[in-house]
Image 1 (cartoon, rainbow, N blue to C red):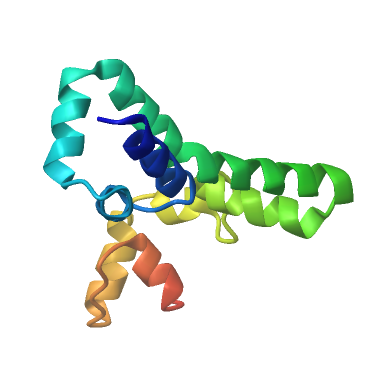
Image 2 (tube, helix red, strand yellow):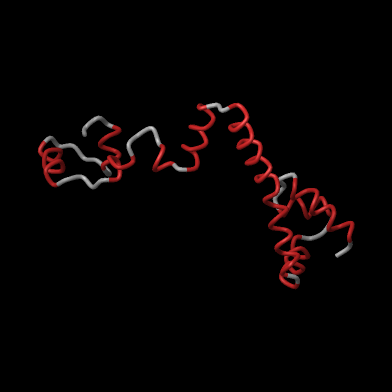
Length: 126
């Protein structure tokens, strides 16, 4: 694989392109990339690093913006995305609990069928 091909792969992958598009940009077949990755574990690691480069840059931007602006809204949005169970707007503990026998019996007597506790909470039954 030439230095020019590797440079094209790097350029495309660092822009967030999937491997198929990166191969098109570098004018190589996808199987060529995979053979080279299998033959050279260091190259395979480099490909993975390039694939994650844009995501890491975006993470840095978000983290810097939160730190710089001290914006509570942005901080909450980040925490809700990263730690859904802990920071969701609904109480995760309440939703994850099993439906008790008493609750199930009461719903059954009323002819109510729910999928799970979260469904019952969403429908206002619990």
